[in-house]
Image 1 (spheres, rainbow, N blue to C red):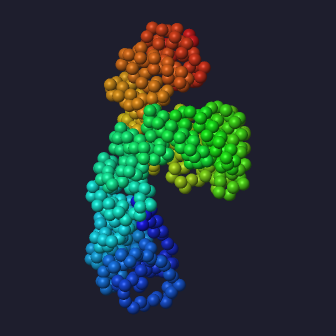
Image 2 (cartoon, rainbow, N blue to C red):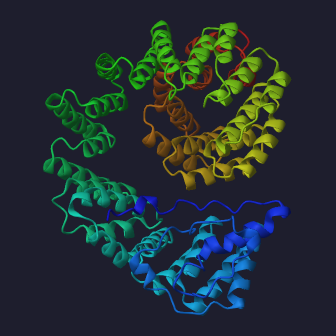
Image 3 (cartoon, rainbow, N blue to C red):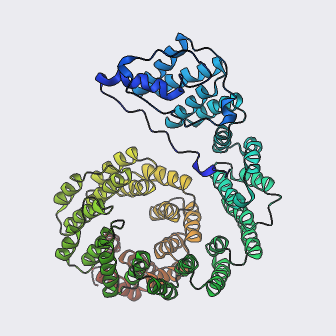
Length: 611
């Protein structure tokens, strides 16, 4: 049997609320469904069917038990007390009260030693998102059904999530041993994916190495260990593992892709490996797509474009290369070419019931906005139907167009009219609403909007970042720092979080040494980001290192001509005695964005009126 670590956490749907008129029928069915009391050898007795409910038939809620599981069922007679407790627990679930239902089933499991009671308690705890309770229940389930693969797999998964991979190791070893040889490679990768979900990454790595000690000649084992080494911050070890995987199988694309994503040297090695694979397998769509992706990661747009053109030539109805070619053209500012590819995409998608032409329409609308053709944008948006995945983004784009026209309140009414069930869409609507308030310089309202949104969606990193920026605008620096610290904790590789906090400290001339460490960390994560480079230069200026500040700010401005970067460059040149150079920098910045806040405040503070 294939090891199914990845599929263990499919959530059981919550019990729906039901009208009282049919409550009796459904509650009775729920008892039958949960435990199949009348069909099991355990609790067997002569049934007394309720003639009112003879039309109701429900399958076993958990699927058929395996022969090994059936032999674990206890020979406990069905009592009225057991029926009453099961019924009470199911009614509690009907009323959205999982806690008493869980406790009832857990107590029944301990009293009867019936693994199905423990299984039901486990599922209730998982549905209620209480992993500690689920772990307690699943361990009872396994104790009463020691041969159940489902119980063992779930027990191992919950132990990993609890940060106890060592405790899970015997269970994982047992499950891995059951996997047929021809499925072992995929099972190894699934095992690593499970271990990656736990907080104890180093412990997970040690367990993985132990479990795979006899599989080191498999490229999948080297790939799995390398992935876990990356999570455990062992970058040199990961590189060695990926290289070993390629030594075992020179055309092993997953290892080549991982290597290509690690750094410039590794990227070159990974690209070379994929290029060899494509040369040997020129008809491989997977290989050519992987090569195009690595070229994109290396910022080799022309090379990536050639690969997508080959894919498009080989299959003119394949939508993916068309969209890739369109987006590359946008990045190259070849808008006519982008429109051509998007029009082809839409034409093909319109004839394919499984495709969504809305994906092309939304980009065509955004291209029209970019070219200041708002009427054209509206025509493309009108083509997007309510059943399209792009329908909500289309309505948001309408609001953004209204905002661009200075119609702030109309834009916000447009956003408020959008009906969105997906939490991701709801969060995006909130972010867009706050951005519109930002554009109108209504910063307190933007902050209040984002404070509520982060309460509704506390795990959304974009909302957290936007809330921090709004708090900074209103002078609530404690709120700003708390939000950015939260973001750094949850996303330690997010360069913008370090950058924003470091820049804010430097701009207020506070804790400059700490600010320097923060922006240097951001720069290490995103070395070519012009705005982060601007922050590093600004911190150097605050620390008195004008020469390095000027060098960094000039480079940042060359990478990304921007009014704020120009304002900073001008100020450092001014303070360094180069007033002509400063004026030239400010004049260029004013051409880009004459109303830029940072530029205007800089000129006012330095009393510069002769540009």
